[in-house]
Length: 258
Image (cartoon, rainbow, N blue to C red; front, side):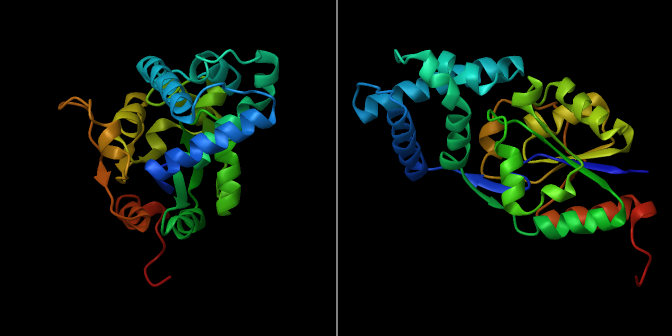
């Protein structure tokens, strides 16, 4: 019997996308925060943004290649802002603020249609629910869940910047399982990418892995091998998950006519 459903965050429980406008807004807000804390880049805005994005690309290459995540106080001085001669003592106290700013400004985020209703339906059936998220901010996922009004559904929230491991590393899934006191063979994972959200839980022995595609799915999965693990189910909406679970896990489905 399936008893536990764990979710990815960005692209799964929430719609997420970015464009030139969100990138310009991120550049502007970063400069405001840095200057408010006595940190002046000393270069034109376009040069500032180029240096930042070069640092981000370098960090992502290291992080995704090793399936590891550093904390904001390491990421920002040593990677994102490495090409600036900023006073480290001034920078360190604002690194979490910068990390959260990036997550909510570079990306447009909003709760995916049907998310709250789906979570309520699963909770009422007796499922244990939680989140496993790759996020370079320590607290962003917790804040966003609160803002959406769905934090109370989650028995555990496991974040890469806290654990030090990124999906699809098996250890971040094992940590979540320990914190949920759940067995993998009784768990379902739901995410938007094959590279992180299908391959990862399958390696750890999750019973089912479900995909719901997003703006990020194609670009994140561009290097997935043809023979990689595939989702047990692809859903179009989050409420489709409830219907499918009722079919394959009748022990927790409502009685007919209930």
